[in-house]
Image 1 (cartoon, rainbow, N blue to C red):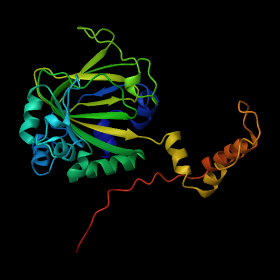
Image 2 (image 1 turned 180 degrees about the horizontal axis):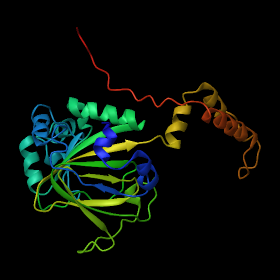
Image 3 (image 1 turned 90 degrees about the vertical axis):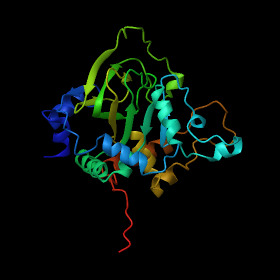
Image 4 (image 1 turned 180 degrees about the vertical axis):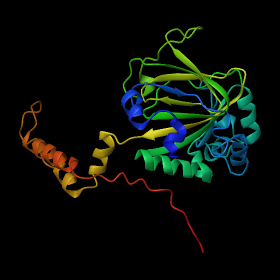
Length: 296
């Protein structure tokens, strides 16, 4: 069985691409044991207790954005606090108990099972993958309503969590703090919701506004970030090409030209033709696994 089939079950690759990818959320029910061999609370606790937890890779946040690094480290003095990113685990527990959500970025780097899962899924999808771990206590609200600039595949590994989501006006390239956030009233009017239970999967496309709440159960989940190649990614890679970089050095204005006037279009047309020719060539995504050191 492929990793894609394991995650998406009855959804075929073609159905996913046609009906859901980049435009429609998808909820897939699963058995409570589905992810037990991949990641569970015992594995999460082992990672938390066998590593030095450093901010901001590991952090605790809430829907009011009122939890700061200084609330989670040993308080010494201003200079020491600025240099110190080591989290105090007792303070972390207190912050979670007060409604905070634990976030552990790139948690696959600390689990051979998750890293193998990530590498295989990236190979199958031909897409870069990252995995973050989350934990929220019962009867709490997660982070502020937001949208992600990448697709997210949520694997509910423990307990349950309710996801609220809606399609609304947004600009992917613009910071969320500079955009109007959809309102949330007491009944979450205008928001769709699903209860994600242990073993369930939720695909949330980029640009979909969402927030979460826990109900009667604590919640642990993995957020698998999917990063298909964008035009911006491709153009940034072109800067490594000497021919492309040289074309960018072309003059498009001449001395003595009126300050407010059009640029010369000939260099631009040359650049566009170069990009069109390059786009027809094979492009290597360079999906390499994390390198290992082997002493013997």
